[in-house]
Length: 123
Image 1: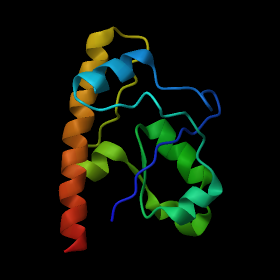
Image 2 (image 1 turned 90 degrees about the horizontal axis):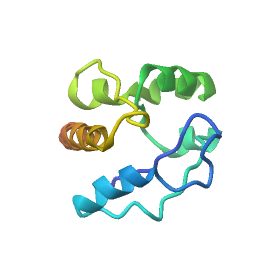
Image 3 (image 1 turned 60 degrees about the vertical axis):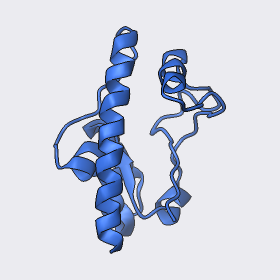
Image 4 (image 1 turned 180 degrees about the vertical axis):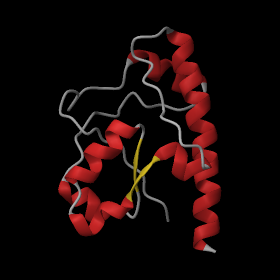
């Protein structure tokens, strides 16, 4: 069984819904994320999850600082772990709606690669 959650490294958006542009892109792809709310990563997350993936290098550094020393090896850069590409996932916030679609496509490809990798790991 795979359990997935999302959280930020800062407290800026605790309790907030996703960006309206993210909600719209997800909706166009048949996914409803409108009920999600922001939360911050906390210490129990490092115990609860086998893998902690940061979207960019800054997030990975923050996550490794937050992680108990014995659990910091669980933290990886998403695209590097998922597809072997040492690449940050860009933040589309200051760009137009097309950036949110590009981000969706990038994440969908990365998640597909990640699922394949996890399947291989479980076999």
